[in-house]
Figure 1: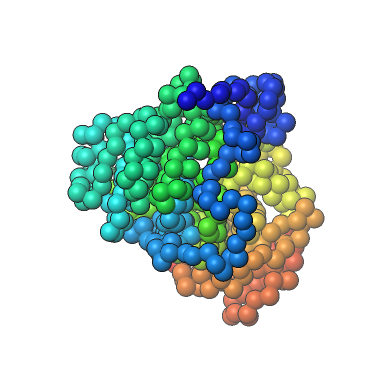
Figure 2: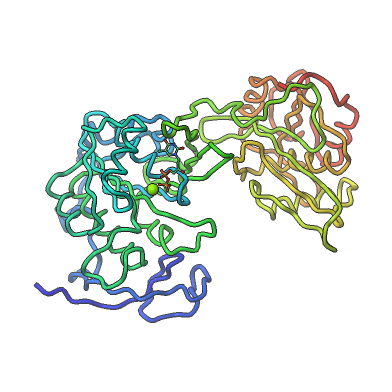
Length: 461
Ligand code: TYD
Ligand code: MG
C-alpha cells in the first residue's frame, strides 16, 4: 500500500512545526533552524496515535484501570533508580543525552546487565558486536543475559520490538538510526523524530521500557535530542563534574520528581554509584585555617544534602573592563552578586576580573548559594580567609538584603553532621537555635559579623 507523503518544516532546536519555511523560529528565536521533513499523511483523526488505541470513544473510571504488579521495577543500580523516580516504568520511554565520551553507552550496558529476570536488548549502531562484547566483559555484564541487535535500520527494529516484546530496550544511539521511508540521512531532525515516534509507539504497545541514547555537543548546536524531548516520558542528561565524577540529572519526568540527581564515579570497571555524597565534593585539607576566597554551603538535591566548597579569585582586570569567569555557577548570578557587594558591602570590583569555581566540579543553581558566593568573593577581594568551620546560606536581593531559603533545617543538619559548627543564616529564616548560629539581615551586616570572628576558629572538618 502506498503511503501518502507530505512536507512540513521543523525547528531543529525546539521541535516547532510549521507548514512553511521560516528564517527564525517564533518559539525559541533560533535563526535558520527550520529543516524540511517529509512525513506520512496521518489518518482521518489527523493526530498520531501514540498510546494504545483500544477502547476508542469510551471513557473509563481511573479505579477500573488495572496496573500490573511489575508496573515499576528496580534497574538494579540505586543511583539510576533514584533519577528515574523509583525505577524503570513498564512502557516508559527515556532519553539519555550527553556529550560524546561521557559514559552513556557504559551506563546503559551496565543497566542491562544489572536488571534481574527480564529480557533485555541492546541495539547498537555505533560499535561492532566485538566491541560491545569486550566492553560488556570488561565491566562485568553477564553476557548470556543481554541480547544484541547490531543494526541501524528502523523497520527491522520495529519488527523485533513487536515480535519479541523485550522488557527493556536500549537504542545506542538515536543519531545512528534511520528509516528507509525518508530520504534524509541518519541523524537529521526528520529521521530522529520519525524513528523516535515509531519506536515509542512500538514500545508502548509491547510494554517495553525504551532508553534512547542521544549525543549532544558542548554548545548544544547539533540538531537532536532537544527536538524529541517532548515525545519521550523522561529526559535525563549526563554531566561531568570533576574528572571522574558523572552526574545524571532529570530535566523532565512524567513518572517522578526532577529533584533527584544520580552521582557516579567512572572507574576502570565502569560507573560506580555514590550513594552517600554528604562530604563527597569537599576538597581534602589538613590544616585548620583556610586560604582566602573559600566558603562552604549545604546543597539539597531531592532527598539528600551535601556540602560544597565555593572558590573565588579576584584580580585586577586584564582588559579595561571587569570580567567574570564561572562555569559551575551561572555567570549572570556571579555578576549580580558582585554588583550587590560593590553597592552594599563597600567593595570595588568593577576594575577586577572575578573567577568562580566549585570544588568537585558540580554545577550549582540553587538561590541559597548567593550568600556563600558573596562571602567567597568578599574574602578573595579582601584577602581575608573565612572561618574554616563556617557554613552559610541565603538569597541576596539587589537591595543587599539576605533572604530566607528553603530546607533550612536540612541544610543545618547536613552541615553539622559533616563537622561544620558555625552557621550563618538570614534572620527571617525559621531555624532551631544552635550554639554557634549567627543571623544577618543584610550583606554588610553578614560581612561585619564575620570580621569579628577569629579566622582560625575550629578545625576544618
Ligand atoms: P562511553 O560509555 O563509551 O561514552 P559515550 O557512550 O557517552 O560516548 O564511555 C567513554 C569513556 O569512558 C571512555 O573514554 C573510557 C571511559 N571508560 C572508563 O573509564 N571505564 C570503563 O569501564 C569504560 C567502559 C569506559
Ligand atoms: Mg557511546
